[in-house]
Image (cartoon, rainbow over all chains, first blue to last red):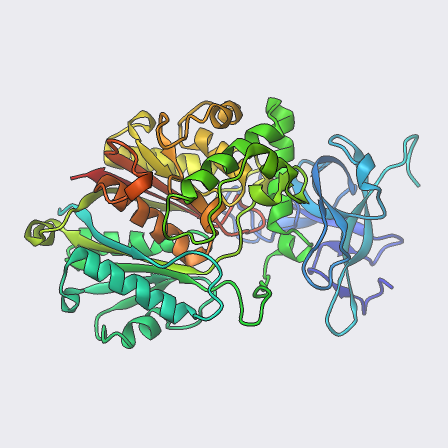
Length: 140
Length: 380
């Protein structure tokens, strides 16, 4: 379960304090550039500590994808990896959740979900942001 | 300011070396380089050692057993460009007058005893999310093919060329020339990349001897000028490692061409960073051998063959040699040294006068890639 005690793949990617998990980016308070994954400083302006956390819509489109037939130990092989262009502009690489790889193509709409990224050697699931294809005719 | 020259080179076989560790591989490459240069090993002023996974003081552990002790030994890590970085550090020290004779070694043991591969420890976000390199390059290929209407057959043409070149290279015992059908029909690793479009996992080491003008004039063996040495790091690009051009390669090549006073059309022979067939196609464009989107046709028309416009990966490239991280960059410059001094045997590029070596890599989320090295050699 994705409670406070859950093990996360990376700190600060998902805010679980609200009613639903939110994908988190950051925004420079000086130039307005939006970053995902979130960064503390603004690398565009070389400004220390210039960004603030920014909840993202979690919506995006697929730029490219690839099926990982045999990933590193602990990963749920086979799984689908994708380069995703987020609605706010940045692109990221993440796993697709619960998807038939044959149906994936560039331009497909996806949305953020929290899922299991891998299982550590001690048997504990590691959670993090994944993306799910948005059903045609709207999500949720 | 002195110029810098490559005065000797040596490498081990590249492939799986189950019975040898990185120290043994390193020593073989260093002795071969010293003997090739015909130089008294006591004259070494500095040694650099490029590697990624071989542990602290790797260079000293290689050289100490040979009796090469006391001089500064500089261990350098810069991911896939570690070997290029080792050469760049040695180059700078000779340029600065701090050394007249420098050894640059690169070595890596990627396979482990008893089979299987070393686990790669990840401190990178995208890697932690399950991003493995064959899939990253598959996404590059997918985007490239779609954007430029390129084809899997064009990807296969790169593997056909490099696998044939490799059979002419005595340092690749596993070399075999593949037909296009064999490449396309080999097992799918990450669509559209088949097994023969991906480099094998290899162990290996390679070393070069660099010298100043003063020492070069004393040596009787052939030398080649190291006319440009460039290292850079990646910038923030939107798609990072899955972009269909390499901004940092373009920038490094432009800087190197300027340093050497040449243009892309002057290059006769090139060892580029081709761990996957799609990478070589993109780098034809990045290095200026053809325009954006023309790399697929460049491959299909075999314009990068040994007797083509510019011979690309005459050694067999990473695709055939494998990519023992730290050794890749030094092996590339070794190949260029042999090509420019007419010691490349059956794979000799006729009339090669100018060579370019390009290495690139290191997945760092947020920037294109960790490091890129470009070196240009000129015939003396």
